[in-house]
Length: 201
Image (cartoon, rainbow, N blue to C red):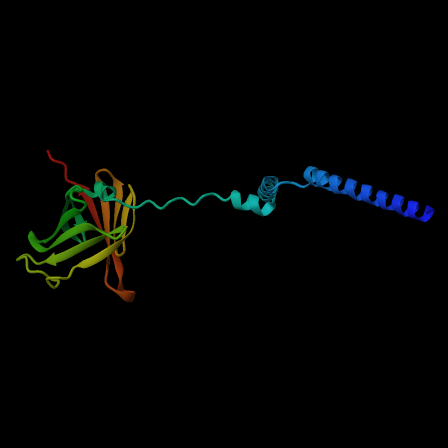
């Protein structure tokens, strides 16, 4: 009889202890277990404070490359005269119009025309290209009918317009140098045409 009483008391203690643990454990979990938002916030904060994250965030954003427009070449427009290759020349450029610019070049020797050039600056993809065709004094073309000499744009700003093989250098508002690469290979050289703006009187 006493044995049964002891067993019953022992079993009751076990049940009470188990019940208490059952109610205590969730309470502890609820107080100590962080929710998903807290974990995410802590992760972001930890990553933002790490040296690697700081180095990434401290990078200076790359500057966007400016896409040239036809207006960037506007300072070339005008009536120019000067000397190049020991001979007088004349070059005229119309202002930007219709997304392009058009120019004319004339070389003179002993008061007679040596040759003419017809030039255009036109859009090509995201950049520009300068095209020119040569003509003799009778306007007979040097190049084939569907061919022209092309100079792809390298860069342009308020001081220079650089094409591959030809460039315009702005000295001031009244003068500029036109520098042309002549020849090919090891015999190639640059020839400068120093031009002054023709001012109407």
